[in-house]
Amino acid sequence: MRFSGLVLCALLGGLSAPVLAWSNHSLGSALALRDAQGVKDVAPVEVESLDDFLAAEGVGLQALLDQQEAFVRANFQGYPARPDALRWQAEGAGDRRQDFYQALRINPEIKLAGFVQPVPGTSDWKGRTLLPINQVMVFKDFSQWSDRYRFYQVNPGDKLSALSVVATAADEPDYGHDINLFSDNPGTAGARYNFGAQPFGDSRFEYSSQAPFHMGFYHESPVITTAAPYLTQTYPEQRAYQYFGLARFAFETGHPYWGYRFLGWGLHYIQDLTQPYHAKVMPGSSTAGLLWVSARDMLGYPEGKAAVVKRVADRHTALESFQLAWLSSLLAEGKTDNPMFMAYSNSATDAGYPDYDAGYLRNTVSAEAYADADGLDEQIGVWMQGAAPAAGFSAGNQLAPGDSVDPQMQAMLVELITHFGAHSRKAVAATTAPVQQ
Image (cartoon, rainbow, N blue to C red; front, side, top):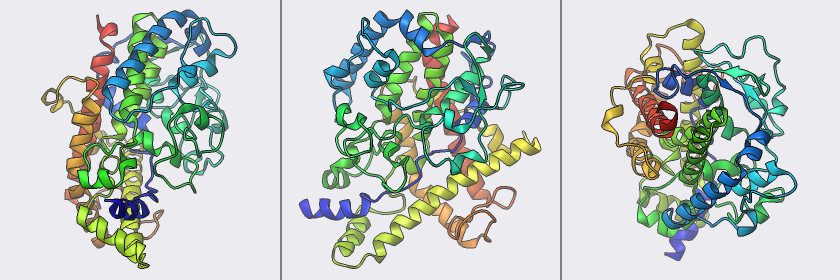
């Protein structure tokens, strides 16, 4: 297996697929949750600073985070234990925010500003100050966000709808929470956090180090994972467990703002794993095919490897770009009767899924996305071959929003968005139980 591992490493180690699944999670979350129990008809919540939350609940947080760490060590195979030196302690001295960040093992440089996005079904953002993007995100290059994201400042004491808080927060883990956490990344966190070296991703992109936290290859062939064990170093289920637990704790202890904000953070990882390109390494490629092109690359024939990686990256990017462009155009034109728009809130399939639990992301969400991956990849390829080039996309990323989309492609996207909404609502129902009582 050593040779197989080397050739797979050569192919998959350069995995550079985009990691912003479904682009703006806030738009989709607002549509999916607008009628959800635990969000709809909830009294406006009062914005609370993180410092006040931590000061009020330090003792309870110590017990919760200790319990979470014990559970994850016992139940999530391959989880790298949190060093004891990072443990949250109720009586800690110094910067309590930094203590909290390191106990969660998230990027200590995150902004964690008070803000809302202008999400559908809300007006909480109106009349508020527009925040510069560098007060919300940690990145150096804001080019892929700056032309289509707007963040509006909120302050402690302000009242917001639950939908605004949870939908805005659902996009927040993409703003730098999970970057530079590995030992070979820039900064000091990676040396302390015990996640080891970054298992995969393209170092040319500053957000690439978040990929192992936003992708979960839980259902790959044993041949693949034995040959390339680094593909098992993915942590979205740990993040979801962490944040949903924090949300329940916040609700139970009388901090609804942080309940909904943590809930949104947890939803992000569930929603990411509804994207088939986040659940399968190379959709459309067989195990034997991957080994063959990898071996040829090692022997000096890199064309096959380059073609496979480009094909998957192009189709992944095209799907995400198309989905956001289509949704944005529907919102702008008020076409709320479009099947894709309605798919977010379509609850017809919700009852067919099991109740949400700690294994749901792996056993239900990721398994479903993995099963859809090859069919989706094939359908995108068929459509791209027959589609005319679309303005705003590079060659190979030629999906265009609107009625020109192939009906089969539309149907497949509607199905995936239905999964996005259903799994989001299942997680919300389980997490907001204290709110509903």
